[in-house]
Amino acid sequence: MDDVRTPVRAGAAALYGQVLVNEKWRGSAIAQGFQGKIKPIFEDGLGLVDFHLSNQTCVLYISETDMVVGNSYKRKLVRFRKATSLRGIVLVEKTRISEQYFQSVQKFVVLELGMTLLPVASQTEASQLLIQLVHEESKEHGHNPFRRKSRSNLAEPAVLAMVQQIPGVGKVKALALLQQFPSIHQLSNATTEELEVVVGRTIAQQIRTFFIQT
Image (tube, rainbow, N blue to C red; front, side, top):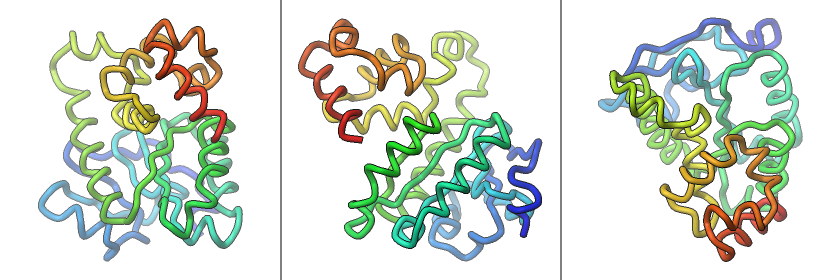
């Protein structure tokens, strides 16, 4: 199996407006959702990675079934984290069935591995999110040096989307938080008083509650 011999294929990259897709996703609802929006390039040598958005960012997918049947997904994520310094985004199917497992998955991915987690309700929703991320990646590599300079390296679309999952935190507050706490680890470990300076006491308490629950 590819993912046994080659956990992550070095140097894999998609052109802007394209996404490299692990061959196993051919014919899936995710791949079908790409039609007419972005161009999928199917390859069977991506190893543990499900989707490559750029030469720096890749996506791993945890399905409802993965969470229900056991912890093999954890081994996959740990192997990925050890094998590469690429920015990894983890899409997790949060459904009525998998919801009971979601908090433990979120804690493992975000707090233990330091990776970005984005919940999706289905493969169709995942496809829409991936299309958005591909377009955002393309924008980030545009020709506006001021826009690139003004944003933290960690204020990537996926990280922004993740921070916006916190109740009461919109895009503006998410950007402000990431300027002050440029990593998920720093944000999750910030005190209420430190957060309050950025977003006020009410939102600060909601942020602390969010990370404590996860």
